[in-house]
Amino acid sequence: MINNRSLIIVGTLAAAAWLASNSLYVVDETERAVKLRFGEVIEENIQPGLHFKVPITQTVRKFDTRVLTLDTDTSRYLTLEQKAVIVDSFVKWQVVNPTRYYEATAGDELMAIRLIQPRVDESLRNEFGRLDLQQIIAERRDDLMIRPTEDLDSLMREELGVSILDIRVKRIDLPEDVSAAVYDRMRSEREREAREWRAQGQEEAERIRANADRRRQVLLAQATERAETLRGEGDAEAAGIFSEAYGQDQEFFSFWRSLNAYRDSFDGEKDMLVLDPSSDFFRYLKSPFPDQD
Image (cartoon, rainbow, N blue to C red; front, side, top):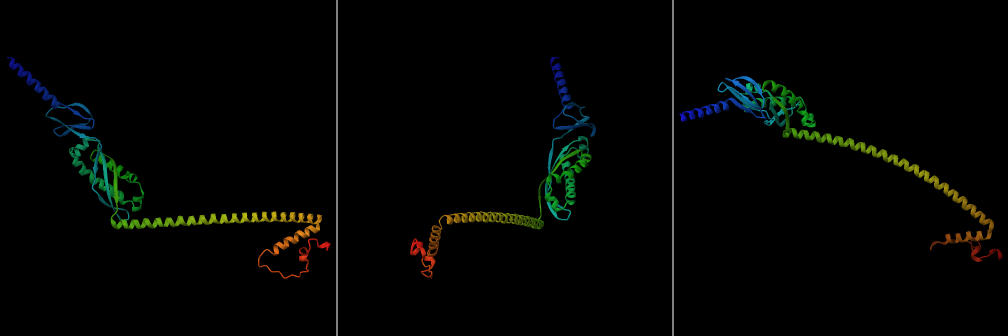
């Protein structure tokens, strides 16, 4: 009797455990879920926590709602002027509508990737096709991807129940033939800009040089005028001093002037003068006091 009771208790506990394990389920913080009955969705977007389902007839599918990364294949696109660029990019995407995601992909992430990648390729092809090569090189890559991200996000939400958070370009390369043409064009433009800057610099230098020369001429003219004025004032003052000295002692003044004349005349070793010895030039060489002779 006791053994039978024990078996009943054990069986009851096992049945309860089986019922609990098949009736209760947990949705993690990083997940969202849908409840199915024979494959048909009966409850959408189940939030994180502990939930109940009917065993056997109901099943639950859980989906990772964290941001996922899709590395796209390197692709070759044509620009507006039909020049090729080789683009390497990646996509950030996330499940936002579990029901639509399940209906479109059966919850298979690889299936979702196979559906997303052609759409990304088409979107990038359209975006690069409306821009010329100069715009692609000049624009910031983040700005370049704004339009494709917004358009693709709207489309993927409706078709797959996923959000395209970001499309980023890792690298944009040019084929060798295009690279040579682009580099030649860039070199020509830089040389043209250099010539323009050099011409502007020369023009500015000439303007500065002309202004400096004009100021130099003005300063020299002012200095010359000032020097002539001072020299004239000095000569006038010297003439006044000579006149005053001459008036005080005419004989001494004549003697002093003769000494200066002698010094200036006989300054060099090879100087030669042909003069009459009786001329007045030698009067003070004959006698220091000629008036007393």
